[in-house]
Length: 480
Image (cartoon, rainbow, N blue to C red; front, side, top):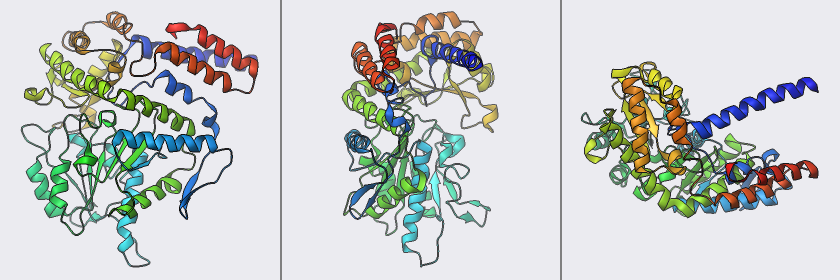
């Protein structure tokens, strides 16, 4: 027991040290990350964390295969309704536990769907898919070596999967060349079109494609992977309204949630693609999940409730902060990617070319040493990700901690001093961060602490332990 106690002391000492560094000293600008509110975090240690609630639609009703699920069943139903409110859609599947799994479920579902019309005893892959090139910002999950693996037929001329990348504009490789894209669609006749990126500055031409294929007898399924921009759905782009058939995403990047995935659509009963939706839900369960992580499902309901309450205010602030940040970086002598004439970016992301001052990974290391966290990024003209010319940043997490346009100006100046002059500003950054530690777009801190304490008090079977824990939590006050 003494040895175990020493090991735990060491481990939890390191946990505390990392928590303090990441939450009180660092400015986190990784665009695929966010910090959930205290209410969302507390859900992840509540009783559903150890439970199961497998269920499947059978003969017109949801059949649950475990008992003791009345609570979490209602939670899932409420979460589905909250997500449908956010996206203004008719269907939502919440059992995928990551954005990549959500994409894999779509690929499986679409493949199953196209095989509804094949002869008995045969099963084929998708003839052709169109997607964003990885080197032009496309997400790895939408590539043949990612979640699309083994779902696309081989092109006999190339010996590779028949995936055709969208063309981009020569003048701005972060924007799609729409006329060329439409020409390619007519030539390739894909069965699946995948919009969405991980390096994401501008909207995708969903409406243009949807209009082009609307009268096709066998039109492609139009999918939009919004993992990076899920939390700015509507203010940035509303693909379902533009004509997308299905939207996937991660719930923890720009969205307020824990790490999960989501699939939404308008494939309601009596709509042309209803059978596709049934194939998608069957691949979510039992196709891809058994236990769908019920504690984070509980957290997703809390996060979606927060998002529905604060959506407009939060989204507008994110978009204005990103454009202001890009402008401040440019004013401080940094090479910001995108078109300066339209504010460099229409999302939460800002991409900086740093090759003059070192490889992207070296600059990211230097910034991390100064308590600024980014990730290095291959730019469209780079030959390999291993020799990246850029860094990719996002404003969503620090926006939620209260930073505004002027604050991002101060941050841009600090970053320029690190990148251009190799100055050490670690202490200045840590002092700067300490002004931004209270979470916005959720309940006030004292109310959050009270609810968290009640949840903690009920989460353990040992009353005295739970009581002491809750008392300590309540006693922590505003510095928790």
